[in-house]
Image (cartoon, rainbow, N blue to C red; front, top):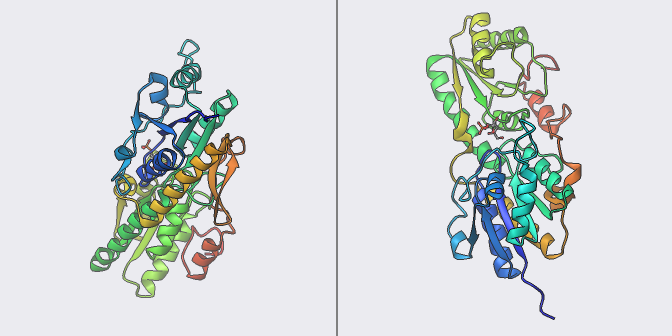
Length: 345
Ligand code: F6P
């Protein structure tokens, strides 16, 4: 008996990042070429399923997108399970209706923590769902790696590298704010790779007086300048951005001339690195292999350096933060980097 052709939907949700198109291509090519599936690209995250806005993807429509930044499908931060008012439309109901009308056998949701939580919610409602983790923040629970992180790390490291020469010319303190939401992975890794002298993470408390005395100590040792890497998610007592607050406190407390850079969305733009292309493509292919085996309700993941999958229900609502005993933190202490002054340095 002939097996019926499987139909799958794919969407990208949450903030964009490099590698999304590589993942879309990985899913679509594997599904179409290897498994003879039909693939629908859903527009603008979950909004596209609410509006039934989609296009059929062919092998040729995903050709040439491997290296492109952003997402050809568009994205949004629409959270279907979040109701603002009781009379709001029942979005999960609309999603289920359109999933059925399209005849989907599975929905592939590429996104960060919020997206995986929604994906788990839809799986709970009876839909077949597979999650693929992406984000420059690298904070998705259940996986050691999200694609997007390596590209953002390169961009942030390059930016920190460039601060050294201007800092040296003017003998200044240079503060730079790095994205990452509530997690410090990007600030920690780029701070280490870029030779930051102070690195502040949301996961570790800081003491501004200790940071200032560390910076004054460097000036006394005839170090002409210092680089301070600040994760956007650190706690600050004012409404200012994290780095704006820190740079003001440093200049006031040390009397050393200080400048601030907020790197912002540059960290999310442009072409993915080779590592992100490989990870996104591998995740895409693995997601389709799960679908071919009728394995649903899972998120593809890297565990112990291997591509595998974890149950979606274990992920929802959890964040993967930098543990205080992480080897990179030990490494930073070993290099005499100040991590806020409340711990060893
Ligand atoms: O999650 C990725 C990220 O870039 C975070 O690092 C940042 O806090 C957030 O998205 C910014 O979100 P938005 O695109 O909604 O401004």
